[in-house]
Length: 250
Length: 243
Image 1 (cartoon, each protein chain N blue to C red):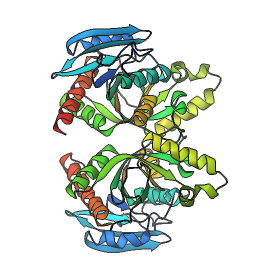
Image 2: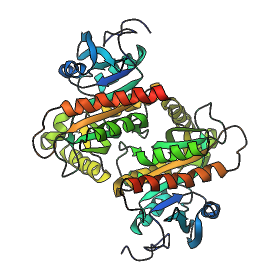
Image 3: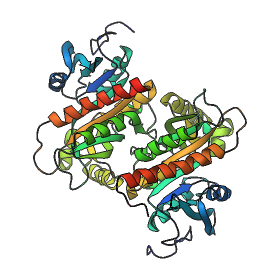
Image 4: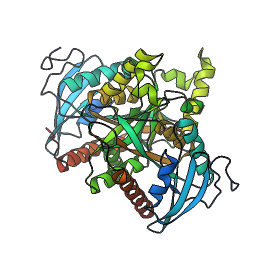
């Protein structure tokens, strides 16, 4: 597939997106995120892939939804890289793993448990799904700027939402429960469904990926504003960092 | 907790919170020369420990021996006697073509191509370095003006499986997987990091690693590597004092 052609699933071509892309799971969350860009325009909508492009500090940035799960997220990442994007921040909501988490705190992801099938089509299971360190630090600065309560750590990226929430009714209940306990012992902080494949594929394509999640614990969830504002400020932070280090931002 | 640990022969008070971890017992003394008032604390099996001071803070160096089995024991027992931050320091192979001998590899995560960490966590759990250690090492390497890469290490159980895969009974598997690590962007190949990172995650302590890579050309002195690791410990001490 030629890189200047419109990509098969995301229906985007070169020039349609900036180098910096936020990746929510929910197509409906693109519009409220884009509302925080300068001059946002809706670029494309196809399947679960919804894209807006605008500007932050004069630099072109975009938001593309991935849909739920690693299979569709992998496609989004591959095709976005083909049209010129090279820096990705996954933004969304997640479950919690550590007992002292409270609803609304942010999880800044340092690495991901590859508890899914997609990334095995890319790399042997021993290969780690690691977030880009410069993005981890940019998101951390953004969270501090927004006075967010946050922690930095490992996420579980799973293939089954209901396997996590209702493990006891599954045919592999004991395995799900044992492994959940392992993730808690290992210090993992959140549970979502896309990060691991994004990180493994980003390593292979030599692009940068990170993620910030708002954690759902026992309490009702607060509004997502602090999450969305942190993700926007994280883009501003990495753009400023890249300018300082002489990396092209457009 | 305060009893003499079975393998490392150390008790509480013998080591600082910051510990450098070379593989080679012979390298512990060389590293300890960079500390103030270093004293030899213990030697047992492959575990050699010196303790001294950096900027007035107690720091130590303990060798792990080669491989994850002995490294896991070292870290477990060091945590039991009060250590909280670990930097693995050593030599490694290189994976990316064009790597020059003497380039430093600052390890962000490790491929779990070994058996030990499977006794701790399922294989899909990532072996990730602590970001504060990674940042301190980057800052130190940059301050010293040394060529470095930041990325993933392959932690393997067989040295000769890497350097002479053709002599192995699983040659094709070794070659295919090496190719995968290159495609994935891994930068170096050594034998301890993955288990250290997994055990550190479980024990809620900080671990990172810095390696000097064998690549094109001759490998020179290890002093720049050791100086960078020591400077990174100073950075971490400063960061902790400001926090």
